Image: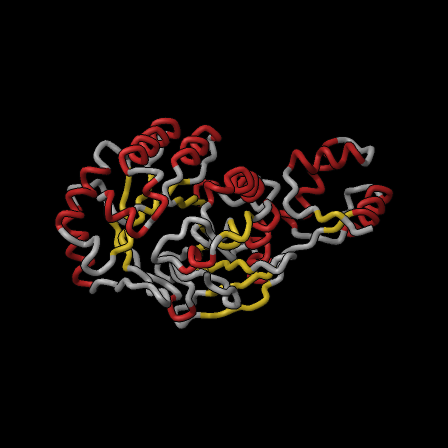
Length: 347
């Protein structure tokens, strides 16, 4: 009989497992710490567990992580990892170092593919294969630590493949493991969940009291333009999205980030500036601007750096705060919107 993989078990599930094996719940918490914090995957080496418990774990259970099928390294130091899941579906994870700030950001996937079909995104061109399980989400980060040590990453962003709010329960459980002091011990306040604007998910996330930050991929504040590049906007309209984000900020007492990719001659005009400033009025927020990252087959082009700087100067001080982000890893298709799984066929 195949051994059950404990990767993705939460603290509560580990405690339930301990009870099932005739032990006190605290033994489950010990097991949780061994696997996630200490990263000891050999039950026989867990010396504070009884010999009989270690034997029962060895007989019926395992802890199998993710192994990278391919790794690519950009000229700017960005690393992209391609993982092949048990059913063959590919997912990608990106590790982005920033020498100036000392940050090392892990960009994590939450789905294999994506159902939303944004017109500028390679992942959307794949279509949705399936949601990732909790273990498949956490496993991406465990692999980074196994390969690069405890300091492998300082920040985690759910900006990889997929729409996190369409897999919200598993994402929240994964963040629970990531942020637990006996788990990966990575602060939820250094974790960001990015969404294309799934309104029910935003409201549900607010109610979970998850401590991660929220980022909304806006890309256009004019309804017709947003629908052209993001089909989901026809279902979740801008006025309703604004209400949901305001609700989120009120419940969580945090500000949100609006991500805005600029496309030459499309969403980079003064009309777009004014629409953007009206949209965010009354919402505690900051704005991240970035240039569109080219995707094979897409019709869009990136604006010049001068145009990006002009757009930023027109936005501020009409909006609370504006940052211009620099794309990383574009030469290995690791930048925002470029993740597709190197061997995945595009639809």
